[in-house]
Length: 128
Image 1 (cartoon, rainbow, N blue to C red):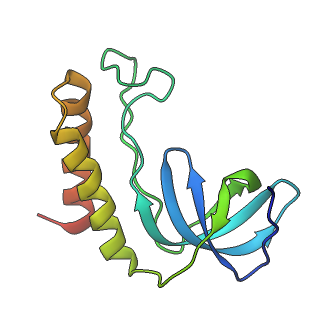
Image 2: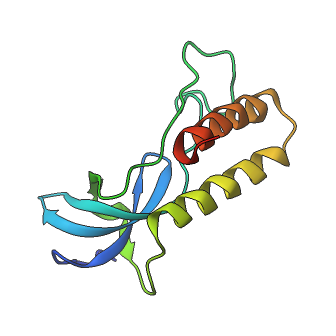
């Protein structure tokens, strides 16, 4: 089912491996432009083409999209959002800690490397 949304609506959108709450600011042929309001899932770390592997040319550090940052999201990855939108900073902290907690439960070389990336990002996002 392909729903149609309008400029100004609040929706969820998937961008790379993150999930966000955003406001539609523009409609393109196959995409919506979302202005980010909150983070629901922090992006996954590492090489997306070689998931869960450490020995890759570049183990990517992926930041969450910033508050009010605009991004193009394919229409198929946009869904309605109901409810109150949490403050961006609170949502980022929650999404980051959920991802970190998930990685702490694993004991692989990849999860440890990804956790290192997230700890660096946490310092960058929130200080100390």
